[in-house]
Amino acid sequence: MSNDQKTPPARARANGIELCYDTFGDANSPALLLIMGLASQMIAWPDEFCALLAARGYRVIRFDNRDIGLSTSFDSAGVPNIGAAMAAALQGKPVDAPYRLSDMGADAFGLLDALGIESAHVVGASMGGAIAQTMAIERPGRLRTLTSIMATTGAPGLPPPTPEAMAVLLKPPATTLDDYVTSYAQTWKVLRAGSFPEDEALDHERAERLHARGLNPPGVARQLAAILASGSRKTALGAVRVPTLVIHGDADPLVPLACGVDTAQSVAGARLVVVEGMGHALPISHWGRIIDAIAAHAV
Image 1 (cartoon, rainbow, N blue to C red):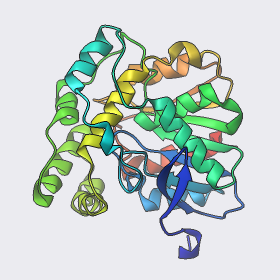
Image 2 (cartoon, rainbow, N blue to C red):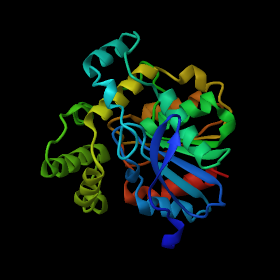
Image 3 (spheres, rainbow, N blue to C red):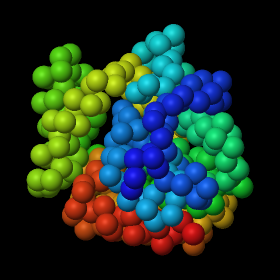
Image 4 (cartoon, rainbow, N blue to C red):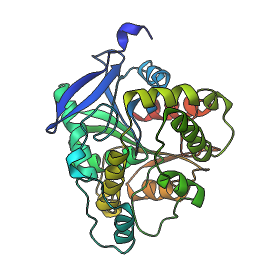
């Protein structure tokens, strides 16, 4: 793709906050909105991945969720007690959180509004998949299609993360660049759940880019509280009629495959694509399969 088909990062007013975003592809092509997961900046959708998707005939839009990267940070909301939030969620009690996934979905709709887009193909990964599900539940007319990648309905009783993946999720934030680079590589070694040399070779550079854009550990805690406070979408997904694709790896240590199966079973007519050997990541070696599946669905 030529460089003139990738826009420089910009900021849009959306749902009362500012979101940093950029786009790939022809502005007149059907919009395809990418929503990233917990603690993940928009560049966790790699440029090359976005360009490959755009080459299939989409205007690909990625953005930093609230409380991450260069979008609005909710510093005044303080740092939630994640231990208490997890305990409350496990007991089915209300979880105290400054915002919920519904608010993050409203952010995404606000970005579409700012760009003058009435409806879009919406693709979410992990927490981004949960946000995308929420968007399909709350404002289905704005979604042409839904693709939920390595996400869960949030229903109780589904398998939990492996201890190693949970440890990665809850480990203390790194305080220096060197520590962050080391921690990033260790985290993704666990989440990829296998040997992926192409990605491992890029870990150092990717970590430096993320660090340079700015980390926000308190924001990550607020995002995690939002997930816990939002509860189960399983019943509400039963009413969704947006054409739905579920993509999940069979080696996912953080959101086990059963969660993807449950998502697909919860939405009438949903299609499930299981990617063999894929963990909780989008490794380069699986891009072809993932992009083929999205492009075949998002028509």
